[in-house]
Length: 217
Ligand code: CA
Image 1 (cartoon, rainbow, N blue to C red):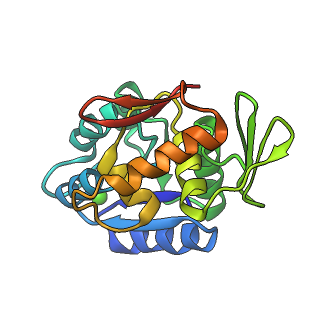
Image 2 (cartoon, helix red, strand yellow; image 1 turned 120 degrees about the vertical axis):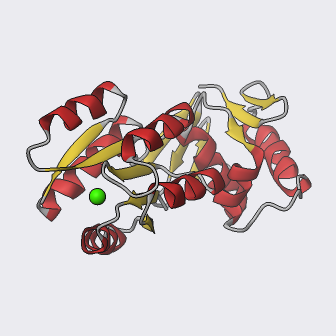
């Protein structure tokens, strides 16, 4: 399930986005100020962040600086008429922007377009001779079906969707297992070992010193 963070202090707008994206099958979290947004981002991996500009505590531009090193796609939510803000947002590295008030159809189209650009909404993923179907949850390597456990599969999808990005061990764990990482590294490491072995990815799933893992694609 794709994880979306909505950082927006106008609760009616945040709620509207939350309801509609949840209906489409996204897992959504709302933050009502910049500080709360940063807290969430620190704790969890998001596939996309919808970011308002005018926010209490710190604003969307400040938060964007914080998000950028993570490589998470960002869509700015901007008030009508603030063209300068939009240009500034795109220059600072946002992927797109939505002008408030917006139509739900436009919101969904832009969310999908940005996720597609990042290869995150793809149902068919591939890596070398391995292909993955996230609908049927089947993994095929050299025309043979490979049996993976639920967590091995989820972990593989997470790695493939974030190809060439060093993923922090704790975040990776929390995303796949959906529970807080409390220093239990062996579960994650043993799953990585099994994925390497079952799929012949020993050379591609790299251990990143002090960080976690990176899949080379
Ligand atoms: Ca606002």
